[in-house]
Image 1: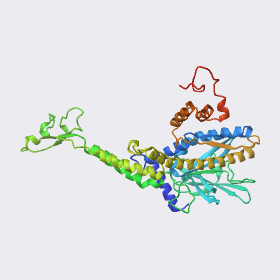
Image 2: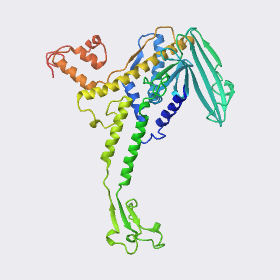
Image 3: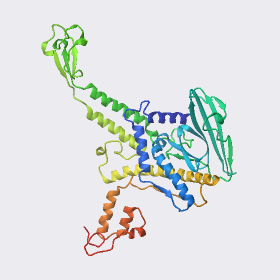
Image 4: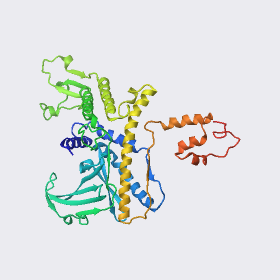
Length: 440
């Protein structure tokens, strides 16, 4: 990984954690969360076959997906996430490794990661223990190598000196070197955001979903600060002479002893106008007009530009009433989001299939389940582009007009095959209704 990529990754992580100059609106986390939601909203991921192997792997995948739904936002924010399965008892668990916790070291011709270094860290008192786990797949020899190295340091920013794995509780069972034969792919998977890498065009490392809008996000936060300052600066106040307030009998010369109306300390601002002050100026109301409309319009234009740059439909984070006016404009805007999210779903599906293969190898190696074919089925839905409620009403009208067979409507609504949908159709009666030709 180049220095430029490392710097960019640190930047994406910093602003995601609501630091640096991008924290006022929390846009990085909001954008990453929205992409994660769109990517997984209608996902249906399961094993196709029905046998002992798929039943076992299906449970492991379901457990992984339940946890990944909470981590998908981080994967979108940092540009990638590695899935590294390991055996624990009679289960296969999955380490979800953030982009800042692993380094890809080799790629194949398709840009898939074939070797990587994963980092794990433990703290014991004031001592930091770091474990580097090297994974490498040799495609020609179909062999897979895993190496573990442990280090000890007294500072969080350095590896320190080498130590034995047995020195750290929980690592003593790990082997320093292990090789697995007859492996057709790496035993880990990497999900990468499928966006053009403008940070390092020669790199196959994934980039954040908001990588193309970092400067705009900073501008939006600056604009938001102007808005909040406008409200603070235009807060109503009464400028009044100190002579108009009561003094404490203990010390009439001390301003801190001034008696103000209860709960009105923010309202009154005290000034010493002097003995010859004009009586008409001894109390004035400060209440300037608020220029929030123009400021909010400026913010909304910046938000729309962010939506365009990251691939979200207009109105996702900007004000929806200020955008598309025609059906074609709405569809074009949604199409941009649909294409980007679909590409992310395909990238995740590729990673999940690789993960299932790795789990399958471990299930065989450790004899965790009987042999059997296993194929992962991924259905993602299309609500990003299509309003399912409106589409159902359109098909319902076609069905009422006898332009569409009822089983096709049921198939769409229930998510089943047309053949199975036919079983849901009730027997026709003479009392009218949708399926008897009577309508509603």
